Amino acid sequence: MTTATTDRVAARPPVALVVGDLAVTFEWAGDRWRHSVTHRGRFVAESIEGPGPAGDASWPSSPPCQEVTTAAAPRPALVAVGSAGRSHFAASLAADPARPDTVLVEVACRIREPAGWLGSTYRMPDGDTVCVTAEAAAATPRTVCWAYRLGPAGVESAAPGTEPAPRRV
Image 1 (tube, helix red, strand yellow):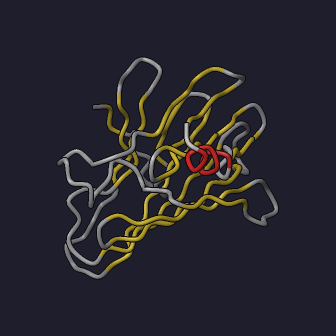
Image 2 (cartoon, helix red, strand yellow):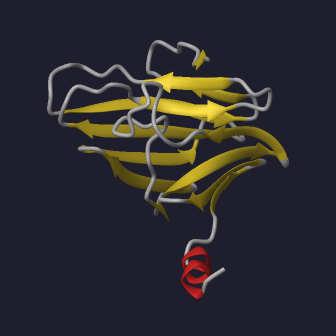
Image 3 (cartoon, helix red, strand yellow):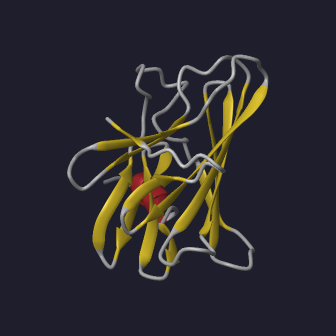
């Protein structure tokens, strides 16, 4: 390992959000942060990074988080931002005030052209893939938002009023 590689890895230690017995841990992987979810040390889910279902890197499988930082809030929180193609992503992760051991994830993506795919994709312990998709309107520019929860049971939608289950692929 070269010194430059060692310095780069050392400069990006893991970042974790711990909410009760649930931990969401971000680790640097290539050009972005990926994250995994554990509950009492048991694997719950892991973000899938890279090109989305259509194979287009401009529309990644999950929001490409290039920066992750802690946020000043009344409860534990992280903020993540990044970009892919001509789109910019921002996500907040915070303790869900109504559910113990649960993180509420809210994502916004500013699109400048019709989206081929928008959402968040996770690998589950059984090997299945769960997708939380966003409804991307054709009119642009536009900001598209979606929300979901990460908890002991995995990934679930947090869409206001509709509560559809994330799609297993």
